[in-house]
Length: 71
Image (tube, rainbow, N blue to C red; front, side):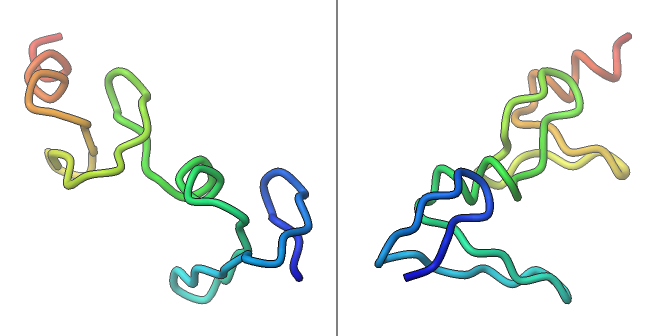
């Protein structure tokens, strides 16, 4: 069993995700998304799909990308 880095739950089905040189332990995809998903540069929701990249900014959808570039 391992302890989730986000919620502290000690769970027998925990898993690890490695991103670059950092490995983190999670008990659910919810915690992994909370900790690792990029945030939309406009509305700040977690981008768990492909998203839209404009330059170095990541957006959850084309609407947010257009709205951010208009302002």
